[in-house]
Image 1 (tube, helix red, strand yellow):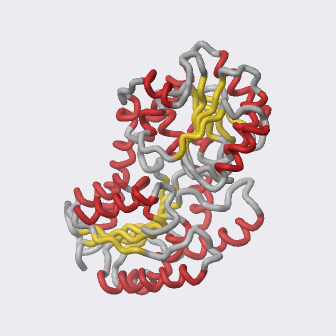
Image 2: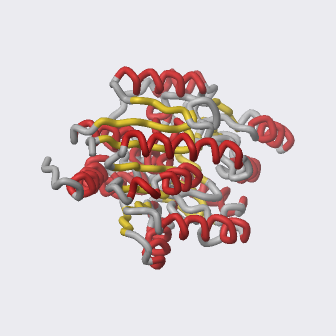
Image 3: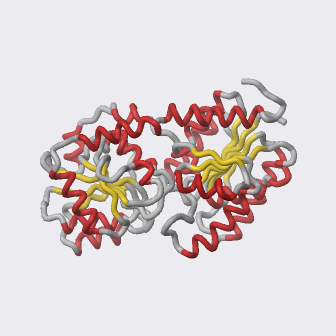
Length: 389
């Protein structure tokens, strides 16, 4: 069996944003890498970025396979089509490792690898946050829980990135389970980025004496920006503003809400940006009110820069922020709570929260995570033919 690995996800941005270091590790280990994902639809980055990323991969000699993989389980036809493509790939190339990501991509890959697992293929699934969790809908528990538990029986290693998911997967007792601290953040790179703060703030129409909270992510129901827009409206200080970096289906609705609440001049929509690392140095605080997360990279990046945080009290977030120390935690829909937390941060003259977050991020640094993933990959590769690295 050739030293060949397949990285698979539902959409290309999952590979681009969350697997760059995994690709480098596999290259370091001398294996041949293929990537399979939907490179045409569904990514949370722009199509221009997706196209550029595809060129970057092929320039490195990485084979890229497009899957018509949807982001919803309602599009069964494309799920079946993707399954057939992946099954042919696994039977043709006899991968040593298939490392899959995202719920639908994970199901497709594990079903497609049933026969090749018997021939030595090791199937790894990284759960970036199960769809079932404390507080999730009944639908999520009735649909996604049994699917994930069933597919875990066809998994050699299930990697979770938060404590809640780890405990649940371990309780199944169906496969090897490991908890890894996310994808690893290049904390020093984020911390030491040099920025012309004044020029950036001028670009966004932000005054020197404004206090700006920032959110990064798709403008969607899941990211829950609405609660911060409403919190801004409750904060009487007109110098407290909110910068949203990202795009999505709810952007126009949120703009209309800001206008209706009379805070359209205090809520700034920046659209998709590829310079988030710099923008984090331009703002004063970070708001992260998501309804659902695994272990949020965007939040970790803000912590690495040393920003104080207001965020939702959900799985993943609670692994990163202790209430009252690195920031404040609130129920996802607690507008008044978020407003009070933001007011506390604005009123505080101390940078202690930021210092705590920088210290916390040491165990989530890419060097620590990469050492763990390197060990995992080596172990899986050495299980066949006792290959030594």
